[in-house]
Length: 168
Image 1 (cartoon, one colour):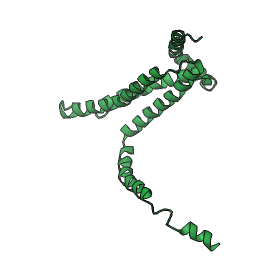
Image 2 (image 1 turned 90 degrees about the vertical axis):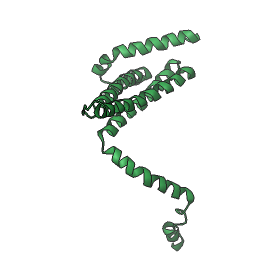
Image 3 (image 1 turned 60 degrees about the vertical axis):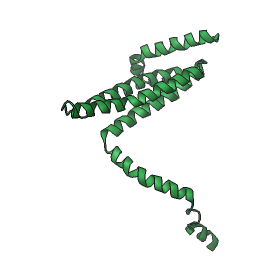
Image 4 (image 1 turned 60 degrees about the horizontal axis):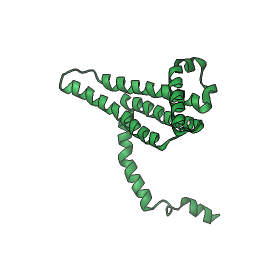
């Protein structure tokens, strides 16, 4: 019993260089994350980022099910996603420039407008991809009707990609 107690209380397993590095990184990152998370900018971006991740998951599954999963299309999708994730930063800079250069102090107008427009666009794409992936039974009918044109556009693109590769 004493051996088990010693193993539980022992610090030998905790005193490792990798744990020290992780603690140091955490000591610097945690205060920064705490400051950022108090900002509406952080939460708006977190929402947008989460929707983009969900769009990638549903889009990958939809492409796999329709046989249109193509690495070249995926590679351009990675670049497109990186650009989309960068655009809110440009909105933030627009807000800063408008305040500092033009004296227009409307904090967040460009940032929030751009971020929520991109989030909405990604939500529509994610919903259409989810339907195409076969998960439509969990999406309310009114929502499916709202995104019907995106579902149709994605289906037509998948069909044309199948015809290019000779798959039907």
